[in-house]
Image (cartoon, rainbow, N blue to C red; front, side, top):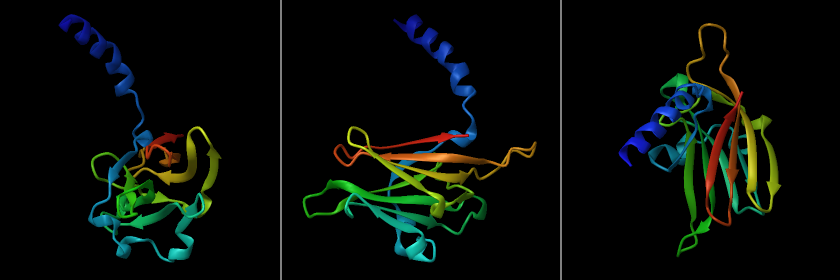
Amino acid sequence: MIRRAALLCLLAAPAIAQEPSWSGAGVVPCDELAGAEFIAEPWEENSATFANGDIRVALLDGIEPAAAAYRLLILSPPYDEVGGRQCRMVGIPGGHGYGAIEFAARHASYDPETGLTLILPARQPDPDPAGDDGWFQLAVRINQQTGEIVTTGVK
């Protein structure tokens, strides 16, 4: 059993090591950076509602570090016992944000089986000095039936 687990780890290691850094996105519960003071100005251009107002997405600007200041705020079902929505933030695993997110360039689509999908141009915090400009398409899927929020990045 231990040998099988070790073999599986060895087989998976090359795939994990080859994952580009720009594809990393993480969904975490809201923290102090989810406060209203961090919603990027102007609010009306950096916030949008979907699903008859049940889902709200806003661009957050954490100000520092300047190279990794941007995250997405997501308020979505399920609702808690007093009617509040879950609050989640999308950023880079490890608590960092993106170098930029083009909120106005977002595209939204809906599939009844998987939920709302938002696609936004985003920039990794530290582009490759060898020429990669760091821009990619950040995809966020919000399933209001299950409460699941999944992210991916596509170059």
